[in-house]
Image (cartoon, rainbow, N blue to C red; front, side, top):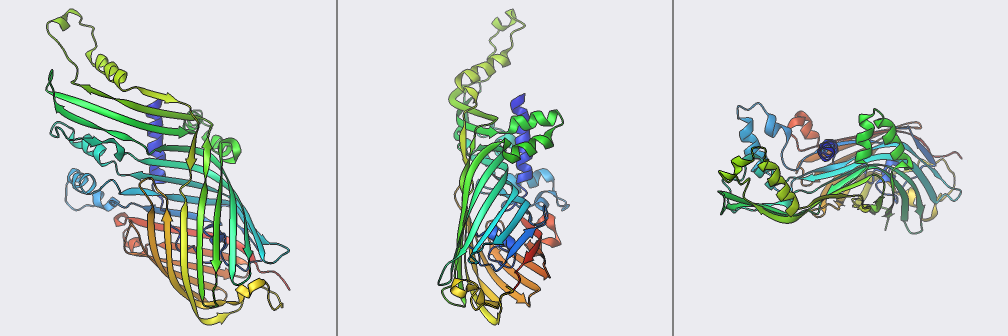
Length: 477
């Protein structure tokens, strides 16, 4: 019974995690926003210091599905819902269709420039949930259609691939301007895991064939594994009414710990061109606390419960179904263990090329010095920028990629805009808009993707919304 509770809890967590997309193309290289440091620690910036408003400085909420939308199934179009599930979900999706992504909520985020004005330091804490699930096509066919009409057809057990995690991330970064237009950055991270689960290395098949002693024979050849940590403790805490306290404890060094790093750079070969790239979450969490793993490994062929008359009548209390279950479990051992394991983070890659043009704009830094920093990188700010971005993330079925074209517009010192067009596996019509407002020291940004979908959210495969509130200073003379 405990296993079924675990599986239900995992499904619930996965459903919540699935509501999130991953790419932050609007925030990337939008260097008027302090949070752009989080997607490229080597971003160009001219802040003296900044401080995010706790729990409001960085909120990212995204939703996406690469297969079907809610409207595909539940639209009032006169079609039978069972037919739509069969045609559009079971028949229309493949094993590379996914629900995946990330959410982040900043608990603390701040940064300051050091005594050497070429160095900028940042630090903070944020909560992150990350998950992915691929469409388990053969499992769905087997559950809906059964196997009676599919003799000799092998159902592939590797279609089940899913993983998810929830953690707090503590980070400290340094951004350093070098000579000749190069800025580099690095960020160290400590992960404090709240829970983790993954089942990504499943193999085997299930097949039904004509039987010898019965009508059908079913063969299961399985090598399956589900690894979890933190799940049992959260289930127990939920039953005892102390879930919030347990999540808080595990998120602040009371759970499983790990290490990671972010790397990035920005390079200006001349005053008009900017090249950037970053590599995020090169790291892992070592799962040692509250670990529970489940394995199913072996091969068995059974022909159902065999009742031989009249011998069976001599023992009316004989449980033929339980004997069948015991036979299967003996042939394919279902086991659990508490072995520690490494969970690697989903590493992300960003890169961009930007061309600046239009009116040259001065830095906001309050300083009369000729060159605030080596290389004079801050002197090259223009009213317009146009370019392209690449995004990739490491996933269980291979890298996931997105391409973005963008236009950046600065309207004086108080307002800047970024418009994007992104193509990825979720949609080919993702138009996004980011607005950054600077009212004195108060910084407010709102970023939204796939704007065309807001006419009917239920009929879209992707939607995204980000916002934040910061206090920024450029220093005094």
